[in-house]
Every structure is written in structure tokens, then in C-alpha cells.
Amino acid sequence: MRNPFCFLRHTLGVSVATLALASLAFSAHAETRVTYKSAAAGTSYYLMGLELAEVVRKGTDDAIIFASEESQGSVQNVMEVLARQGNYVFTSPSVLIEQAMAGEGAFAERPHLRFQEIRGLLPLPPMTMHFVLAGDNGDIDFSALEGKHILIGRGTFSAREAARYLALFDLDDSVRIADAAINSGPDAIKSGQIDGFVTASAYPSPGVIEAAGSLPISLVSLTNAQVEQTGASRQTIPGGTYPGVNNDVQTTSLPVMAYTTTAMDDETAYTITKTFWESLDGMAEAAAWWSSITPDMLANMTGLLHPGAQRYYQEAGFEVSDALR
Image: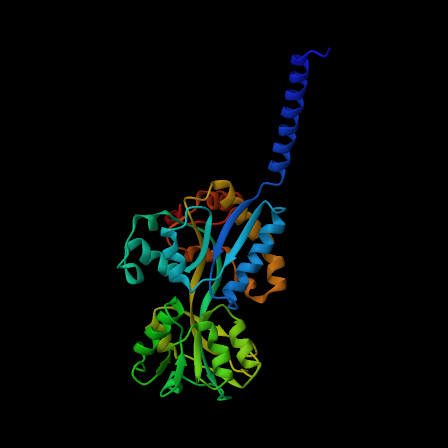
């Protein structure tokens, strides 16, 4: 008769070995999930998020997976720092991070210590102001918006900037604002429901391309004095960027960064940052907006770098200011 204790030892041995193999298999296929929020679907920053997700997935052999979520804009992205517990990456102009940490601006009514946990990862193409009007009007200035029905969006950083510019240039009382989400701008201008729309987007903006592909459009140019009045950086959209807009357009832009929080471990932040920079040339070949990224754009970042990102920049020899460390 077979010894039952021998049988038990044999069974336990097989079970332990099976569990060990299963554990190894699980580890080999383990993945880090990251929630990524940028902007409304169809916008340039949303598409960038999809491109970045694919680059990180391929560059890490599926070890890090980005789950892109639609967002109503940068203010929402920053606000969600209060609720997100896991790996969270989001895009925002640097100025909003400064406001959140100081409890000012859009965050004055909801100051919170968790905003101090925001950490920087990497730069994105700058947010360029586009003031789009229907009609082939050539080189036009800001006064062309007077008396027009314009869509600027709702609750987004883009909408806040557009409203600020209208007030700065004394047009807030003479422009009728459409009550609609920013991503409805191209359809609304094509159907004649509005005269134009404003979007803060990296160029070439998919929404502006869509509108220009269906009807003649013009882009408003700011004067040198108006650019200085905004306090933003001068930005030129070269002629030919959009169908039918052959003149250079002078406008403004604001730096945009990808941020996370201290909840992300150093290795994940390091790997995301390293994969991004090592894949940047290929990304720029596939989509023109990535070609604007340079290491010196890190100087526009507000707050502190994530230690994992800082480790990569130190290894790669990037110049990083003491303020970011």
C-alpha cells in the first residue's frame, strides 16, 4: 500500500512547483497601468496622448500601459489630483500648476495640500492660441472679431484664456459667446451656427484642419503690443500650416507639461521619461508637433521634477535648474 504521507509530500511538491511557475508567468506579464488625461477627444493634445501611449507601450514591451481618458481641459486634469490614488499622468500649462500650489485662480475655492504632491515629467508642444473665423479674409487683426458669434468652450483653460484676451482688447461686450463645448467648434462653423471659434492647441490643430478642409477660414494675428499685453510668449504659425491660410500668423503660446504625482514610483517615472526622449525623433517623423520639443523647454516647468524623471535627466546630461530639483 502506498504511503499516504509520501503521496501528500509529492502532491504538495507539485503544487508548490506549479504555483512557482504561475508566479513567474504572472511576473513576466505584469504590467503597470497609468491613467492619462489631456483634453477632449479629437483635439491635438488628446491625439498626442494616444501617440505617447503607443510609444510607451512599445518601448516598454507592454510593461507600462497608458489608459487615455477624455478630459474637459487642464483645469479638470489638475483638479483630479485630489481624487486619483494610483499612477496618474496629466497635461497642463505650467501656469495652472503654479496657481494650484498657491491656491489661486481656478483653485482659489478649493485649495488643498495634495496639489503640493504634483511632480513634473516632461514637456509637450506649447499651447498655441488660434482665433479662427469663417471666410477667406487674408491677414486680419483682432478687431475682426467685433460683432461676431464665437465659440470658446466651457470651463477649460482655453476658454479662460480666450475670455481674458477678449477683455484685454475691449471686445468682451461686442462678441457673442456660444454656449457649447470646444470640440464642437469645427462642426458649428461648418454649419454656419457660429462665425468662428477659439482653441488653445498645439499646431497643426486637428480641429482647425477639419474646419479649413470644409470652408475658407482666416486666423487672427496679434500685434506686437497685443502679444506683450497678454504676458504670453510670442508664437508664429507659419503660412501654409492650414489649407487656405497662406500668411504667417502672429499669436501667443504657453508651455505645456506632462505631470504626475508622488504616488508614482521612481522606476515608473524614470522609464516613462526615458522612453519618451529616446522615441522623440520617431514621434516627430510621424507627427509634426513633436518636432518642437527640445530639452531647454524644461526651464518652463513649474514645481518640482519627479525623482524618477530627474534621475533620467541627470543620466542623459540634461540641464535642469535647481528650482526643479
